[in-house]
Structures are given as structure tokens and as C-alpha cells.
Length: 200
Image (cartoon, rainbow, N blue to C red; front, side, top):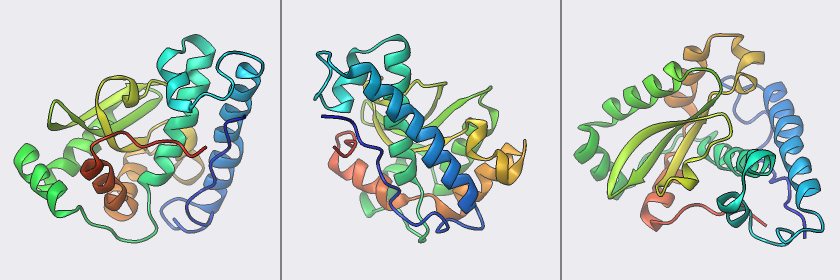
């Protein structure tokens, strides 16, 4: 059984003008697809064939880890975005107030983490040891392996925004956080209390 290329949960133009159709077509159809294709080539005929993606990630290293983790990270990222305005659930809103003071303070922390992350990687909102935290991971590294429950992520690899914003990462991060961040997805992850599962 192969790991599928997860379809986008919305149309390619659904996030415009914040993220363009062209960006999504290339980011999903080329970058994400390449990770999936390389992953499937690597696991074919091995003990990892047929295993859930999350299980592969947690035991992998080297190129296998890079391609499996990036497959999961991208699937999680697509769900972290929404063409519709969403809001945190009551339970997540309470946790945000308790751990950050306000939603604005959380958004500032996420923005700072994403904008100031050096080179390629991911900014995350996670639950760790019962507390909300903002963290970042480098390259293919994922919050899934650190013992935390990821709630949402922002991709800060340049291919996520270069077509639309060139080198202006702050403009991309601002557009995401102010317009298309999927608080319903974050709330579902928070309320469930266990990490999201990549669709088989």
C-alpha cells in the first residue's frame, strides 16, 4: 500500500489573494508530490510498506525521515489554512488566554517565530506538557516527533511564498495569520488531544 498525495481540502484558488493558485499548484502538485513519490519509492518492498505514515516517521532517519516527515508536514499545513474565517473553540480560547494572555499575544508570538526562523522550516502552535507553546523546527523536522500535540503550522520554506511575495516572508506570515489561519483545525486538534493523522 502506498502513501497517497493528500488532496487539498479546498480549491487551488480558494486562498487568493493571500496565497495564489499558482503557488498552491506548484507547492502541492510539485513539492508535496515529490516528497510522496520519493517516500513511496523508498518504502517499496521494505518492512515500512503498508505502515501508517506516522509510524514510519517516528522510526526513520536520513532521506526516509526527510521525505516522510515532509509528506506529513505538508498535509498538516494544508489543513492549517482555510478560505473561511474561523475562530478558536471555547476550550482553545481559554487555553490561549491562560498561556499567552490574549489571541493577539499568541499571533505575535507565532509571527515572530515564523518570520525570524533562520532558513527553511516550520513554525508551530503545539500543546506540550499541558501548555500551549510556539516552537519552530528546521528543514524537514516535525513537531510530531517531539512529544507535543501539534495544533497548526506555518510553512516558512521559501517555496511556500516566493511566487507571491518574493523574499518578503513577513508579508506572507501576516497574510496567513490575519486572513487564512484555520482555527477550527487547531481547535479540533486541541479538543481531541492527540496528533492529527495523515489520510491513508
